[in-house]
Length: 89
Image (cartoon, rainbow, N blue to C red; front, side, top):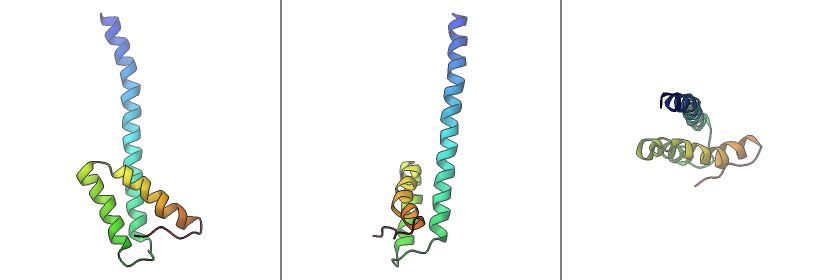
């Protein structure tokens, strides 16, 4: 029985380490998108306010700030960095 518990512990440690690493990466990405939103100039008058609310409240209310950060990345950051116009509301 001790051999099974030991092998399970050896398996669980890398799995939890990978989960923790993904969590830290998602948090860093979320912060990066908040900073980008704060310094970016938007075409619309209220676009910055709306995006900041989406980014921050999605994390506070749903714990899914990383999802909002991914949406922001593909709707605003990536098109604007490649010379296109970011999507607005």
